[in-house]
Length: 253
View 1 (cartoon, rainbow, N blue to C red):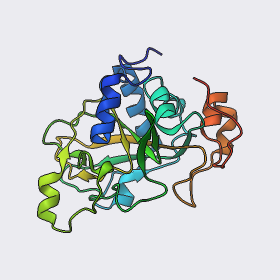
View 2 (cartoon, rainbow, N blue to C red):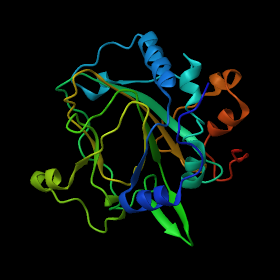
View 3 (spheres, helix red, strand yellow):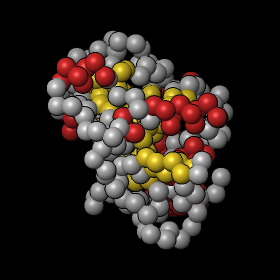
């Protein structure tokens, strides 16, 4: 399968943007046929039409259902950036998809660099970045300006003070991040981010793969995928290793 136009390590510009804003978008990471196959695979999952609740909007269990979902684990557009962001023993902590009907809302502002969260952090030392949980979000439909979807407070992963309580401040600080189908956005979970209510013409569809350094698990219920081992490549299995202070194998590029 041909890959999208954007792959390989972070460029100097992407690294600077991620450090500055807490997120960076890679445009055209998926070619149209990849997007088409992923959308068909979501339909085959039989996920019920999303309601108004966050729980109804999310689905899991997709890695076992179709190879196209597993291909995203170490897709060339994300593998090397993730190994830089999370280290050579990075692991996929958990993954889920989101569908949203027009005029429905998602999760409000959450995350942030202050107070410190041992699972969600960002720092740079000696020219190297260190992240806790890092989200990779694939857009499978267009997220045009004004449609909603992924939003955040740029630079908040470096904030020294907690987010003010006044909702008016939130609205003034939050920006929407437009994407086209096939784009992917990387963001540190230390970034204060949200889902802006969806106002697109059709349903929103996006997939999130959340990676962590090998010693870290985001929650006690992190997903273990031992049943998937026969379906995956050696590198994919390494990315799904259990968290440990001294993970047994590094991930190969």
